[in-house]
Amino acid sequence: MQEAWLMGLCLWAAVTAALVEATTFNLTILHVNDFHARYEETNVFSGRCSDEDKAKNKCYGGFARLKTAVDMEREKSPNVLYLSAGDYFQGTIWYTVHKWRAMAHFLRLVPHDAMSLGNHEFDDGLAGVVPFLKEVPFPVLASNLDDTLEPSIQGLYQRSTVITVGGRKVGIVGYLTTETMVIANPGLIDIGDEVVAVRKEARRLRREEGVDIIIALGHAGFAKDQQMALEVEEVDVVVGGHTNTFLYSGKDPSTEEKMGEYPSVVTQRSGRQVPVVQAYAFGKYLGKLELSFDERGELASWSGNPILLDGSIPQDESILKELVPFRQQLEDKMKQQIGRTFVFLDGNRQSCRLRECNLGNLETDAIVHENAKYPDDMKWAHTSLAVQNGGGIRASVSQMENNGSITMEDVLAVAPFQNTIDIVELRGRHVKEMFEHSVRKYDPTGMSAPGGFLQVSGFVVVYDINLPPGSRVVRLQARCLECAVPGMMDVQADEVYKVAMPSFLANGGDGYSVIKENKLNHHLTGLLDSDVYVNYLSQMSPIYQGTENRILFIDSSELCAGEGNLLPSTATYQTSTAEEAEGAAGAVRGSFALVTAWAMVVVVAGCMWATL
Image (tube, rainbow, N blue to C red; front, side, top):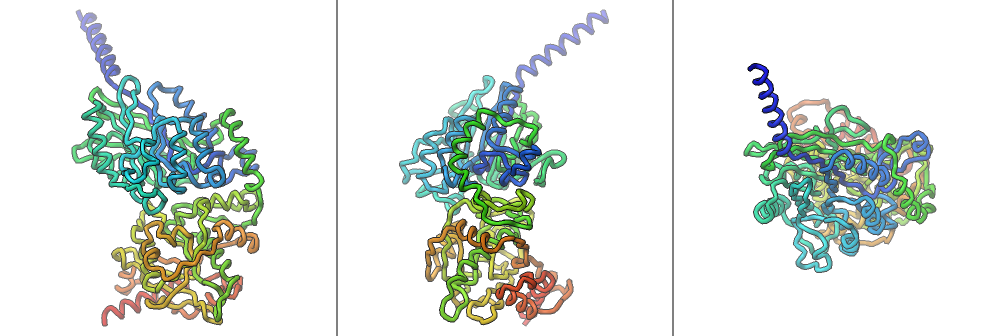
């Protein structure tokens, strides 16, 4: 009797397990974002992979390695979706020369199940993205675009797509950041609220097509991805991009510092939990998220991590062969040596979009140097001031690669957008507004790093991020253009200043309407930014650029409360700046202690003024 009972119990357990297995649906999502034209393998910083690195098998990513990884993962599971959250365009000489053509070619060889549009797909306007959309063999998605006034792109992308995987319908809804209208060139396309559009399309998929598993796939940044997961009840998973967010569970596998666990899980008001993922950038990682859904299409469990595409993953030979003719067209231009650096030139997103970075200093100094060749009457240069948006700095250059050699490929990886350098005349009040806009969306946590943060030459700006947006510039000084010995002087509201900048900014890009709407004069030099940098590097090498406290952050409330040490004032700092203008190497372009002391004195003076 007992044996029969045990046999019955075992049979019941086996049947129950079989039923559970039959009703459970397992899905693997492979994903990439912000690939930025890294066709070939790169070094650890996603720059050019040197021959030395190749010999040591210390290269990462590239289409050939990505294809191998995707193929390997597809072999492990029958239910796999391979998705991209956009921004395949822009970032290296490959895009500068080949534009959309090479990308469309390789995406035919390494096809996706779906891709969302990214803002950089619109860098060359509709003329740059329309032929691409006609060539790619898979759905490209964006649910929040109104293309009524742009017939050339109509019908070439979709709001969503439905894919049957393992007998289950999976809906994928795309979205694109509204910032595209100010940071790219989408023509007359209107880009609406991402959350509203995804919610509307997700509900349609549920109602009209009977889809019960929905993935939001988009390019709007990690904060927006999390908002999407929180507010759109129909969404089961969010796969995002735009902010190059690195999520990882466990010890960091390479140089990237994780911004959180993989996946990041958002709990909706109903208690539903929604995983949110990104996979850093530049094809260095392939995101892998494994999901289990119950019979109702509700997410039951999840696991996964980004896969580091290092030398342990072989490169696909067929893709390597396909790269050859494209590379041959670039070879001569890519390998041209421009200069040499003794130091690491930091173009990291978390550096140049959040604080002063030495590559930002180098670029803006190069712009001023170019204009010092053309002095005006009674002035030592055409302009002594330059700004560069941190989002325009796209790569770092390592002093450890090729003995510090800087090639044309490096220059174009750092500055791929081919802006011209323009000179804009603004009154001081609008110069200050320009710097207020630089930190309007500043996020001290670094989770969001808007590209509009300004790197500078000839300015010293002190911010207090604790103050409300629009009033965060505590003090702003500009290098004197008419002084025999140039020093730093307070920016005056009614005085006119000539500021050199990329044409992108001069025309209001990154939301700088204050420049576009208030410029008194707009001089077109016709010089490409990359050419300006090449000229500077060739003349000034070897490079040993540092950070010089041109951009400072303080907490004025602590100083006003009497905390902190007050050190000597600004006079010595001005002497150092004058030495810089005269080219004295020993000046080291300013001292941290002196500039910080200057900032403290500035704020204390402001505190005293506020009590009058």
